[in-house]
Amino acid sequence: MIVTISSRHMDVTPAMKTFAEQKANKLIKYYDLIQEIEVIFDAGKDRTKDTLVIGGGTVLQPLVYAAVAEAMLGAPVGESRLFFCTSAGGFKQRPVLLTPSAKAMALGALETIDRAIELGPLAPSPAEHACTWCEFRPVCGPGETQRVARKRAELSADLVFLRSRP
Ligand code: SF4
Image 1 (spheres, rainbow, N blue to C red):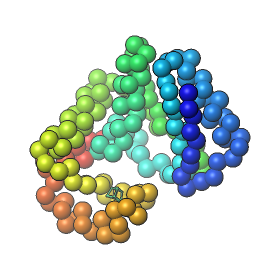
Image 2: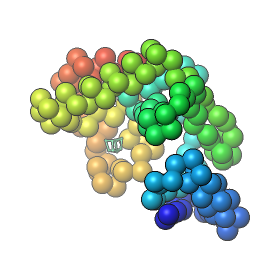
Image 3: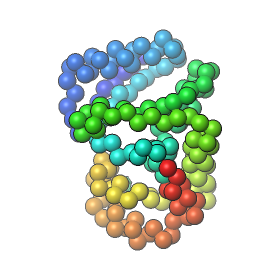
Image 4: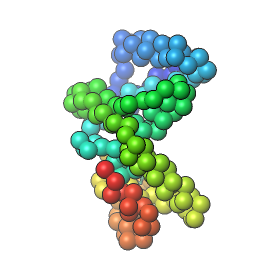
């Protein structure tokens, strides 16, 4: 199994690297078909809300990863968590309960994305201020916030509804 360790906005000490490798290597005990694990340390802030379920479609990892774990392990998953393990992140945990309504919301988000791809181009529609701290700004360019603001009126009702989800 290959374990790759990388970081964004911070340096990774040898102790952190060793810790991550040890934890990652333990996962093979639970699922022996894992071939590769990528660990990314990031010093980003916690921008989620207490009511987080899918964050307007911008935070799908907790529910999607939990659904994958359920399918792989053949056992129900009750809760998924985001960990903010840096001073910038406030060393917080953000739990997301896997209730039937949360799962339905995640499925609805994926269906919205599927429809957008099927019916036409999936235009960028970042949440308010998302471009400000996004690491892909060098790719999108500095004018993306203004361009998106001009296009916001053209967003599909689907996408507007998705953005309203907690
Ligand atoms: S900079 Fe680009 S990728 Fe990042 S949030 Fe804005 S539109 Fe999306």
